[in-house]
Image 1: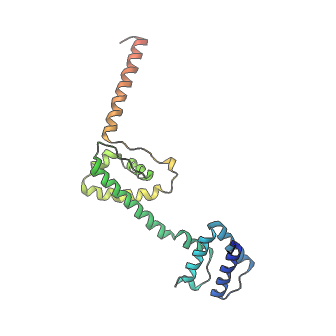
Image 2: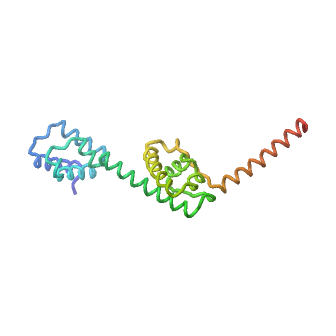
Length: 190
């Protein structure tokens, strides 16, 4: 079984042979750094994918080429995120049908919860017409994409259905009555 250094040297031999170049010490250092930073298996896969790329693979890879193969390009990542947001919107549409505005849905994705809260809350979203939900869906996808770059602690983390809101109003009324009673007891009724 080969150790990591031997596998790395073997990969560098393939790169030298493929591109018919002599790699400098600086080239080797950069590639080693990339392999350590992203893990050798990811680095090797990215390097192999680059060499097999019919368009870009004819040129010696740069760091950005390797990172793009490992992490995906900005466009690929944006498309993936948009697809994820659209799937979450479908979850919302299903929850609107199943829960209605009275019950409070629970979404596993905290970004979905934050978006619903920021869009005016659950009852507000449920009260939309079918036509306006199409536009709300577009708003949701944009907001979802923006919210993914924020720390999760900065996002709203709870939504309420009408049932929850009614319970809060009831509790608030009880608390206000208790405060009024204490005030009247302490300062006398007016």
